[in-house]
Length: 556
Image (tube, rainbow, N blue to C red):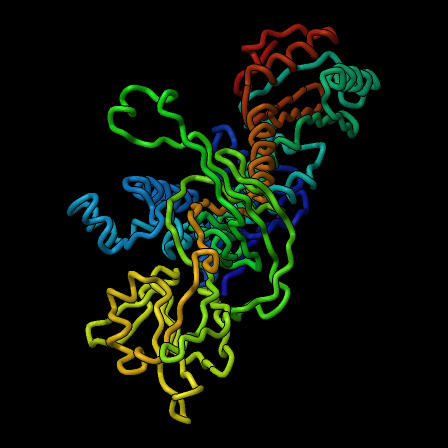
């Protein structure tokens, strides 16, 4: 193993890879050069510059590269742009994406869907890109900020002559007094006083001086990185269930509907719509004989599930009640429900039919049938009905087997095991369709056979039927990550202001005998720093042209 000697002539032992001595600033590389020094990180050693890197170091070097960060940002911006070509799946309600994009946008739409771009922002590869950008920001920051902080916190007042003379702005001057004279110390103190008036922090050591201001601006890029990291973490956190939601859902009147990934249920207690009168509409709409809604609103009730949340009959506690109108959403602890559409969909919610003996004409009951959560057994006089099957939206599959086509009671069907007078001891199977049109379409009497001649289930009037007339369509939104996004954005903006509004300015000065050496550095606005130095020197009796300070200029 070869050991590299990085000890400076001032006695300070520097880490391997250090370009400028952390103590006196003497260049440890290219010592014969007269070019201005690279002061980006004050010559501090960084882990990404480590010789003979291990596997972990190679991973560190990969993510610490600014070039890699630029590539990652470019690909992420490109992916974000592709995700806006066609609407994302999450913006639609009740559509099959496998057929929608081809039907709506043709071959390009089909390719768009098959490439997975229809759900770009929820895809694993997009989240991976965001994660890699965040990792790059963290490693880039740590690779630079720690060595920079170490270098700036160990600054020596009396810098090496080669360090001072190789600054971009500087001055070499022969003075009328010597370093050992009291006049020299007095002159340095006068200069320090003038620099303090310009908000410099001044430190002196004999006939040497260090003046510095706005050091905090050097941390601006890293504060910006912190803000971006928080921002990206918040965006990734949106993929956590319950942290972000933007769904379009339908709410039938009178039926609590569970909001996915939450413990909340929302019920459309009543929907009302007010239409324009014919005399209030334009001639165009009157000619088309179209009805135009003037105002529609949902009387919404929000519940929180307290028990049996995974059952069909959860225990619900009312937490909020509000009227929802267009642009006036329900708002409860970050959960928003926007009114965006409605549909007239007469649907049976419950009914109270009676069991009838067709031979005697007697009617027994009524029994209460809930279309969303029916009971398992019913008693109506001498009859006992045991629920054996229930289909909310009755249909038949390709094999002729009964199925439920949806979770809405569009065509409800009940299968009962009925016991009672004139029936076998083990009971008989009776199939009942609450809607008369379904009884005809699915031939209820033919299904029940001989039992249909002796038994019937029916209502006396429509007063025994509870009907939901409308379905209210709401846009449910929740974004618990948004406060973190705002915090990250605010921190990032602070970092930007610190970086671009202020500049880190430093002035080094030393007297060697009668020779004065002055060097200065700033990361931006050289002309401002040059003006401050010239102004301070002029006020203590050393008039000098600003241009004479350029790159080690001399004067007299």
